[in-house]
Image 1 (tube, one colour):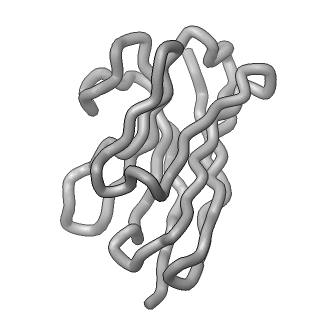
Image 2: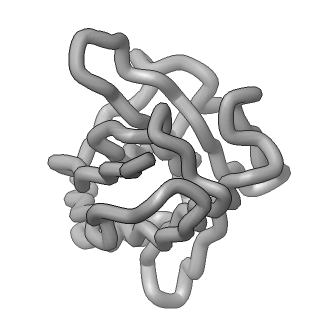
Image 3: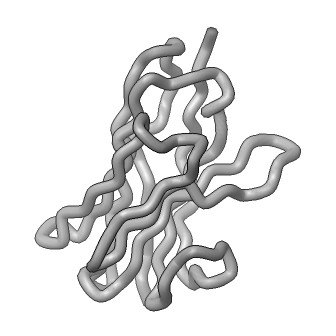
Length: 120
């Protein structure tokens, strides 16, 4: 079992930046693919960034603005958000899977989320 806890969300103006953290416990994340998702009210949960042992991948909506990185020694994965837009407002979740991690259903372990609100 992997327990995940997100932090770092908040209210920020458009154009601003935030760094989200996802601290893991129970098991080391070094053997997992880690993903960041977001869900806005009335919308489906969206996979926005994935960190695998071999590569990182991003949704087109955040490519060039968000960066996922991990510190396995701290058992933590991060999401750096820059050039934020009002449409980035959502609840942001991290999740872990032993699979490739390109689909929501692959992820077995989830945090509770951290809210990001971007004002115009």
